[in-house]
Length: 259
Picture 1 (tube, rainbow, N blue to C red):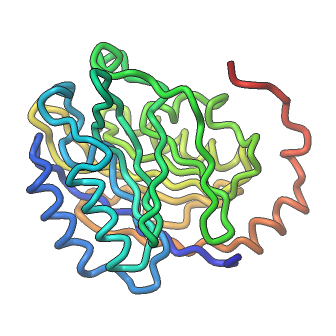
Picture 2: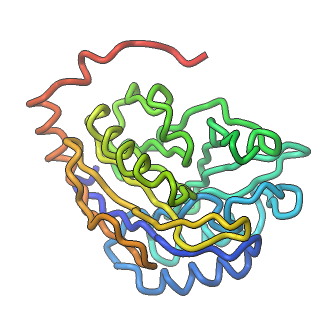
């Protein structure tokens, strides 16, 4: 088990519906990755942008992007994660892929589909939450719109890090900032949120605000930056445990089961 976890949030623009160009761009960005990085987090639908043309751009779990992620994980000896569009038979998922340094793959399908963009008409929702064990850390991954639903995010698994990958547009960026901080406070955990920048082919503007918060809601990264960058944060398990021992708020949480 490692007491420290160094995470890297990759905030950048995305090429519309062009997986190859996006992989090339990310690969170039990752050439500068800090060698001590334990986890690289890419945005939601990082190969396509937030498109509803699932049939046109979907990949399989043994497709080029998952294989590329495995190559990146092995090359840099780090875990790498982000969501892409996956087809299983005639069903499509906005699927977060988590690749361990040894190439092992875990995944989570976005539970809350964004009705305003008709995502629910083109994709199927996930039904199972995921909690990943990595380097002694318990990590819960979620996707974009999931951020608005605190019950689905609730820390019933005693996780240490909760993260969201997103294409969260500029008009609602205040909600993004506020809810990330709230999730950290209410779940007494580290929270990271990775958002893209730029304008997509639907005309939606994205201004980043990728950020990391500690278990008391304190920001660990510069806030409000809108340019392309890799954002690092060093997470300390001993600090998390100390705060949880001093403020055992999770012991008073309500119990429930997902149905």
